[in-house]
Amino acid sequence: MVQKTEIVLTDDMDGSPASRTVSFAFEGVAYEIDLNDEHAAAIEESFAEWVAAARRTGTGGAAASGAVPARSSGRSGPKRSDLDAVRAWARDNGHSVSDRGRVAQKVLDAYDAAH
Image 1 (cartoon, rainbow, N blue to C red):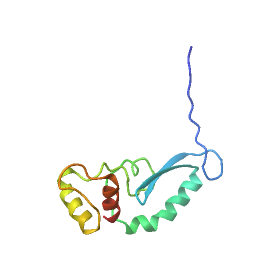
Image 2 (cartoon, rainbow, N blue to C red):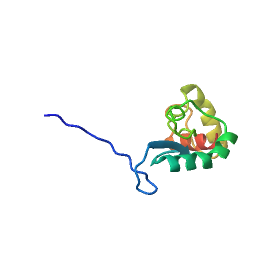
Image 3 (tube, one colour):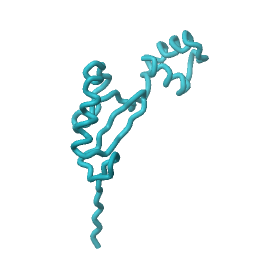
């Protein structure tokens, strides 16, 4: 017996057939939205001014797939060598951190948001 799985994209804005999935991130949260060509062009146009003025933080696959280039939240956090800087920043900003061991995720999130 043969099974065929078909994925049908539906535009999340109006329910029409979608032509692609657009990925973007805002304030550390990644989003995906399925859009038709008209809506994809509209979101690209609305982001264009902001993207032009922003600095790029990584080389994710979003640009290669035709999605809106945006800041990625897919980071795994600071590298171990950066944790001293995170701890120093945390102390200067009222967070309680130990000299060794794991740094709490809420502190890492606050550090990422500030940088």
